[in-house]
View 1: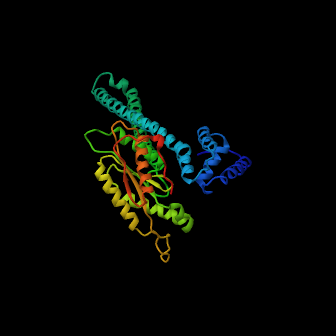
View 2 (view 1 turned 45 degrees about the vertical axis):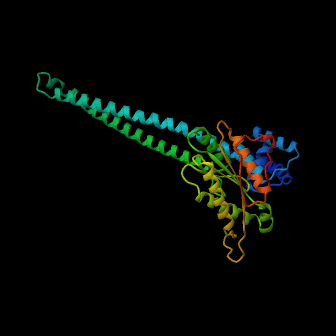
View 3 (view 1 turned 90 degrees about the horizontal axis):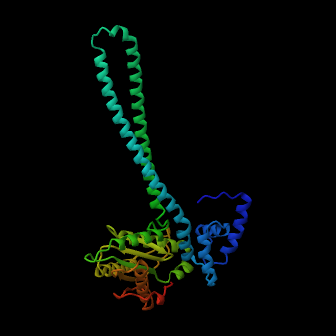
Length: 356
């Protein structure tokens, strides 16, 4: 993000943003400030429209909603810019590399022709004495031209290498834009991209994909009783557990707030259900402590998990809705359990999003 506001204008935007922030349920953290700064600055029309729509429903923005707005309208801007720049640099690297190859070929052929001409001119003839000085000048100029072409080729090759390195750096920056900073997992934007790719590659003869929606039970109580630093520690540790239990093309993501998701492109529903049960048990048996605090008793954390396997022709939003509804059932049936979505289309109009 780049801003060109003066100090006075920035101070005014800060005042306006803070007035908006303190009326919401989200914490007064940098993500929240970025969202409201963009909102009051007036340049992010899409963000303003989404926030106005939420506020029109008398909805107070919590941390999960604020993070989702940030991922969609602010962080994603950098991702799209990086992708566009990366493509441009890739084309530039290709053109430079091609130019270097062409220049090298010309230099080689020109050198061969000059060498042949030089040999013929050095043969004894009646005209050699009269042309000696001119030939020497031509040969000297030819040598200079060959050196110049060789230098050009070297510089082109160096530029091609630098452009290639830049392309790799941009690719890394784009990947980082799709990572959740707290947990190290894929963020919501990365999840959307991974799920879309997984559904696009789905084949009837191959099981999957399956989707797991995972929500920490009573997480608000954990934050209220142990503090947000401990809550962040729990989120980070759960992220490590999920990352350690995915493999190959699987994707572990922080979906938002205390909710996580796993995309399993090549896993049948039975395998997905088994993995969900294993994760539930591992997390519930884990000891979560404040970083550096070895004296405070470990907190016990449980999760509820909804599992859904892909139905042919189903959209990403429909698959998410079925997995989310299964998660809701796991919550209402007592938490710390896994619920499997039925293999039938789900009416998204009746979907209920679980909280806490």
